[in-house]
Image (cartoon, rainbow, N blue to C red; front, side, top):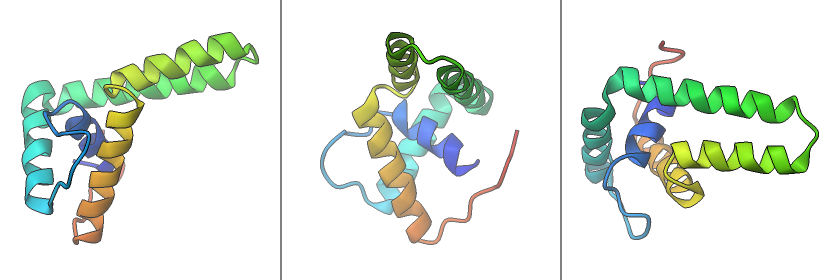
Length: 104
């Protein structure tokens, strides 16, 4: 699992948006998200988000960009949930997690 995979897994888990999440809890929530979507599903969601982000860079229409950014956020359960997942992955990394790179 890559760090990006873990972000998606955490975003689709029941992890609370507020309050402390320890390393052990972070792994439990990541496992829960992995069980929900499976690794293939997580990577499909990441690919869809990447495609949408690439489209935002190909348009100069601010309305279209806003809609595309909202769609990306929705794939991660909203901006707040996505940011929370990123923060937990950062905590796991600081705790010594070594992530696989560029797994597909």
